[in-house]
Length: 291
Image 1: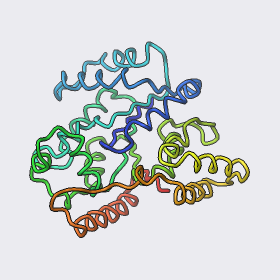
Image 2: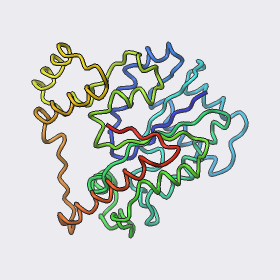
Image 3: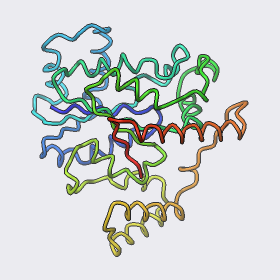
């Protein structure tokens, strides 16, 4: 079986991706692809890993988990999503390290299904907005307490991806930038589900619908109907053009308000992120989804 984990990162798509996938659950099930509701596996997997505490699972653990998650039904591909699969926001900088728990948590998730094909899907985010947003969504008393001595300028998603590859070498890894999701949303649904490229899907414009004005969305859909794009590249250019004109500013513009963070620091974080993404795009064994 193919076991697919969408592992976040924290504060990226806000569970919108799993909601879009669930819109297709019945159609995907007909192809042997199961997308269960989060209530079927999030707590179950978390408690199983906590109880094992690093010990190897019993031989029957896999079958017990699958019976519970799939309600005794069969599947060829199982898709699960949780931004907290690695850790909750409070622990992103545990011990002052960036996602220190990644190796333990993802290794544990993979060991639950030792004979299956494992896929890990990860959305990245510019540290200039990632750090303030995750802090705001944490329960930490102060920004310094949240960082635990970590330097945001030292964040490298490429290091995390390398560590994940080393911790779970048999896993296929797919990566994208959260900032690009309006352009690649439909492809993300296809990548996670593993459906044939020609399969019709629902929810391909869910994110656009949330960040574009109602009038703009209406015009966009009308334009697609009268001018059907011939390629994915054409479709993304159309999306970009309509977003440029009709995007809801409050939905796409993120104000960074961190004491002591100057425009120069934000610019440095962004430039470092762009260079880091360039590095990830060229990492062997990583499927990077670009717009």
